[in-house]
Amino acid sequence: MPSARRTVLAASLLLGLFALPLGAGAPGPAAAQGLSPEEIVDAFEAALGPIRTHRPSHPKGLCAAGHFQATPEGTRLSVAPVFSGERIDAIIRLGVAGANPQASDTARTTRSLAFRLETARGEQWDTASISAPIFGAPTPELLVAGLHARAPLPATGQPDPARVAAFIAAHPETTRQAAWLAANNPPASWATTPYWGVNTFLFRGQDGQTRPARWVFEPRAGVERLSAEQMQSLPRDFLADELRRRLQAGPVEFDMVLVFPAAGDDLLNPTQAWPEDRPRVTVGRLAIVAAEAGPGGPCDGISFLQLDMEPGIQMSDDPTLQARAAPYAVSLTRRSQGR
Image 1 (cartoon, one colour):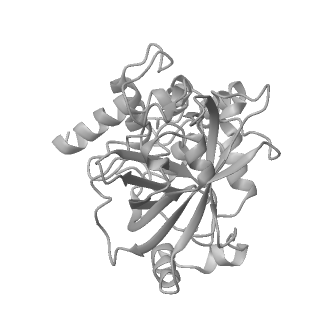
Image 2 (cartoon, one colour):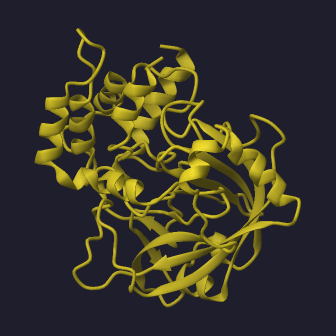
């Protein structure tokens, strides 16, 4: 098991490719050029050590149940079955970033929201989002290079600070997520933070037009972050109990908002957030109605891989999006085989 220091050093900057439950489909033409899935997983394990008992990212989490319903605007903007306007049951997972299932709920890392929708006809769609508007690496190649830079030295068991500093100096774009997390205190609740999709997807509407967009799930309870005092005083594991108490008063709800780019916005670089003034449309509402009483639950066996539902929702050529599925399969195989 890697030390907490090694985990923080490796994950604080490059939450990147494994910062979310990993994506769907085989790698497309914009996938990791020259990198095999095994090389990506090997780089992650070089920095963090072998992970055989839990998810490689956001292993600490809570399973919940709820439902999703598209708005009329959502039905107009996507022909995907999950945007039909019917209420669709959701299996939901809320997580805490890092590679440590005992991670602190007050840590300056991302929180995650993932869920699976399944229509009455058996059609499935997954989403995966984090509580920061940007990713940790723009390409799988830079993810791997950053992980190699953070691999511990045999003599000390710690990364070489000079090597890490040299990587950061050469690739400042990989610091954007860490800078955002440093400037924004962690969420006070899983229910009081936005969750951004960070990658661009292509939505085909009823009019036949395909529109690039990113999504954000905006909390209807408002945004609330921990104070500096709360970050010191709250227990390590407060988030699950806080959500259960909140649910006693009624559902926890999020509006799903599509954000559309303007000319010049980078569609394929998830470390580059789009400006706040971009057009936004509320396309659905997610409601969490119940949380599991303890660890485990129906979300545990789901990797939340089915991120496209063509033609209504299609992955863009963002290389970090296209490269997710194959490395995740390698990681899952290693965990299941215990090697």
